[in-house]
Length: 135
Image (cartoon, rainbow, N blue to C red; front, side):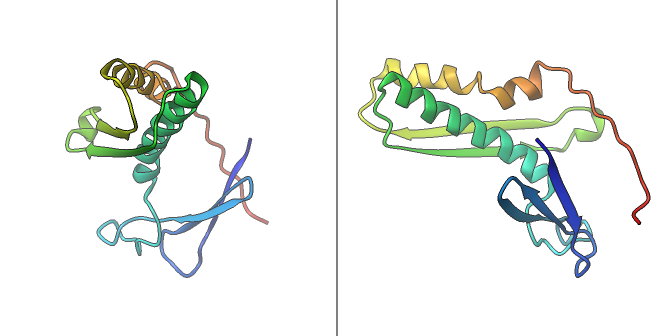
């Protein structure tokens, strides 16, 4: 899969993101020198974790017949120690439905095993960067 970004020439930092048939903007905050035209790269990183947990829980609940009516996921970021290599994300999933305590506990364990959580905590990610001149 390829994700493509193209600069928005009307803003100092903004990028138009294209993923499959989806398009949205990403930008820096005003404090970072952007125009806040969209979420920042850090916001997208954090949102990837939250959305993965929510999607994973919904998928699992449907597969197992667990009666989840609604799910509201919140991620809180503490980036105060990021320069010291510590980036903290705290997630809370609020789930409604006719759930037993055991089912709610089971869904919590499933959320903790979502693929993005694993990528962020247990996998070595190798990144290569190539810079080319535009024609």
